[in-house]
Image (cartoon, rainbow, N blue to C red):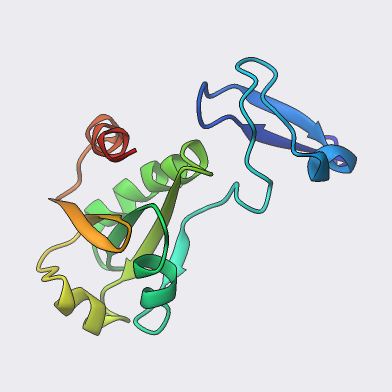
Length: 149
């Protein structure tokens, strides 16, 4: 693997682009659809949210946030985790994907009436727009995200 390049997936057409590290600051574009690619700092895994950081990480975010409410003891949460990671990569630059451990952050879980896990909360401009309780498949989660964009 070449350590002098980044692989950045286009959020629009899903093409994987190899970008030299020296050119990242130039604002690279997708080789297929010509849309601007997110910087590597935005290409990420989900952001871990706490009761303390919730206001800044979720409510103050100017756009769409997918919040995965989960627990370490929850089997379906562990099954859903790779899908959440994949969505974070695929929607990078368009949707902020975050995770909230409800056992370690009970105030936020209670505030949004998270009674079972996994629960996905969809925020737009700081307001809850939709909720999915249960281990839904990627197509349904994607459908909800695309409807919000």
